[in-house]
Amino acid sequence: MGAKPFMTINSMHGDRTSLIEMHKLWSDCHECKLGTTATCHVLGRGEFPCEVIFIGEGPGQSEDATGYPFVGKAGKLLDHWIGNARYTNPFSYAVTNLVACRPTDEEGRNRPPSADEIYHCQPRLSHFIEMCCADGVVLLGRVAQVQVPWLQKNFSELRLLYLPHPAYVLRLGGKKSDASGKAIRDLRSFIELIGKPDER
Ligand code: SF4
Image (cartoon, rainbow, N blue to C red; front, side):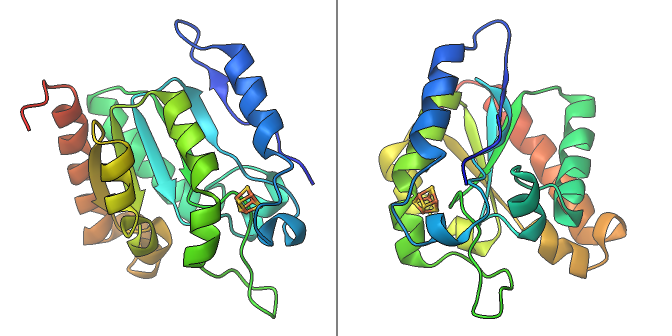
């Protein structure tokens, strides 16, 4: 059990102590039963602080094995979207999930996290969001999108974007699909938006 060292410090503003404290606090959490069945706690990857946080549902088999979120085929597609968007408008980012430990069904296959598991992991996700001091959050997939009211209530200053889950877009044809092209365009527009003053 435990968690891998999970973020790189953004050299201008990063606070190493906060990062170590966060790692200590959550890498051995057992607030829900997933903490006892997962191989490790997958806390996140990316830079801290950062401008944008990408939030998926929960770690899958590859993530559970490596300790990092979005490292399988879906993760490569997400990196493709981010790389394309950063090419025209560079931004810093971090990646995490609604739950830090892999949810599995009775046969040991990946499954979406339950509402109860998501609820129990909200303090860990709150800590992650606070630590990143981001301007925007990108929710990946329908399960993550359900968290919009919670985010709006607790982080009203954040701008939100919803994108389909990369695993779903893989089933539509991956990089060459219309859905993938649209995800890149939406992400580019979102990055432009968060660079502007908030007039809501
Ligand atoms: S999923 Fe979240 S709440 Fe559940 S044990 Fe892991 S870190 Fe703790």
